[in-house]
Image (cartoon, rainbow, N blue to C red; front, side, top):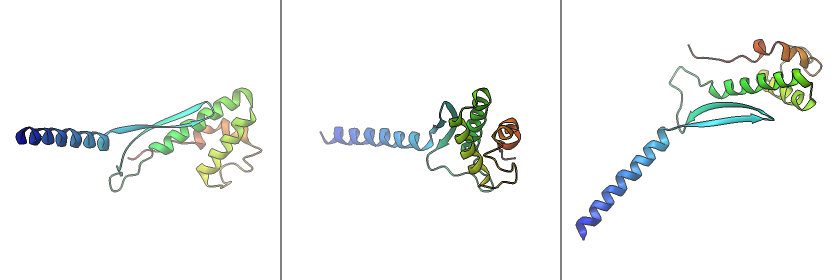
Length: 124
């Protein structure tokens, strides 16, 4: 009786420890979805980038969404896309107007040059 309890407790501890290990080391898929555009990136729980490196995965997913929104806007000039593009533009550049002056009026320029404005970043 006592021996079977010890065995069950040992098995439970090993299984529970294994599950915790899997959850902490598993790379979870995260999605950024705006209107009908989506960007995907992967992130581990409690993982920090190595010293000297930055994690650009979330930022790059936002760039994918912004580029998608521009493609959709260029097809139909819908104001809902325009609002979201301006939000991404302001978030990306912190409200600076150095890249394009009066972005509200020049949304077509933002979308035309989207590959030069919304740029993916990588660690070297």
